Image (cartoon, rainbow, N blue to C red; front, side):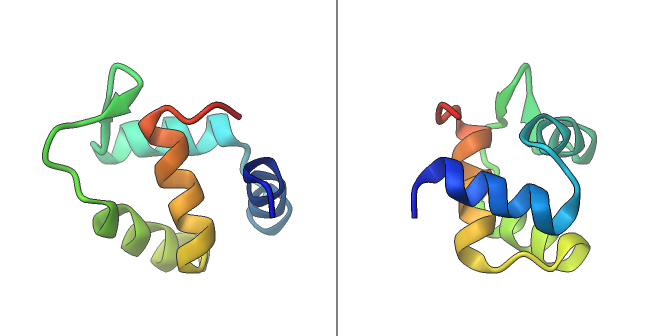
Length: 72
């Protein structure tokens, strides 16, 4: 599965776009100036995405990669 396919599946499941997740991550304090804050662990984000959006690890890690700056 391509990175874009992961993002497309996430949007279908949650109704949230990649930009929505960037905004939500910033509100949660995971990012600052568009990138992950120092000291934030992927596991923290995976837990958040699983609890709030029922995303599995693979899909959550795609969001982590997005927040780290992976191109869409």
